[in-house]
Image 1 (cartoon, rainbow, N blue to C red):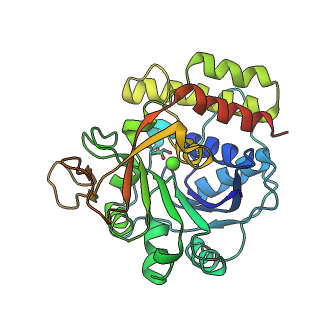
Image 2 (cartoon, rainbow, N blue to C red; image 1 turned 45 degrees about the vertical axis):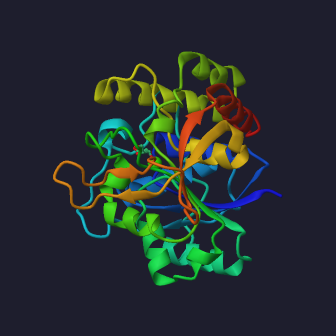
Length: 313
Ligand code: BDR
Ligand code: CA
């Protein structure tokens, strides 16, 4: 049975690859895509989602726009790694979108979809700030019992990227993250410790180029901009492609090893606001519903992504 997911994202180069991976994988039933202000403004990331969905052939999948800004704090975008549009690209002409934004707020779409399915059927996959997910569970608390699992890209237990200790998605809206981390649903945090292993090397890029398809060329164009941006902003030789690690975990959990551990989010630290804290001191207590991703099978991960993109026309 394919995993039913809602992808809540802010495309974003790596969000785009997550959409392609979900679209091209029979193990995933992509119920809908929702957007949230993050890498760029809500208007820009929603436009980008429409373009990615057009390339992926996702014309039957609903797209709903969500929150424009974090719950409490001012909006902050990541133009340093995603550019002015939020999805700047090298050497590829992005199409005019053939996908429209559906009426209705993303938060209501998430609630209605989860409540319309059986308990344990729908998995939420957030790859941007957690604003939509936090509001959804506050508006309709019953979704916390009904969602099968939340598998999110965000946080880390050793390092940050927005600050020395905080990862971008959590740092932008730590209050939302705090809400989401404290609900009783099973939650897997796919953080920087894992996603910094998901490097798009030159060899990986060459595999997409060799496909000779529009979707393959799209990924090559994304990697081109992302490599340069990550080199300048954070000193990486090859860019870490964070967000599709969540989808890969759902396709094949053996690609992403996880460890159960209590998790929390720092809201008040002078230097550590937005830091995620994983407690590894002892085996996780009974009833602990949170896990962190620790080890990526790099080869299998890229096999999954290349295979999915290959299947898209
Ligand atoms: C996360 O922040 C965004 O820039 C990426 O899309 C990813 O979701 C990495 O810190
Ligand atoms: Ca993202």
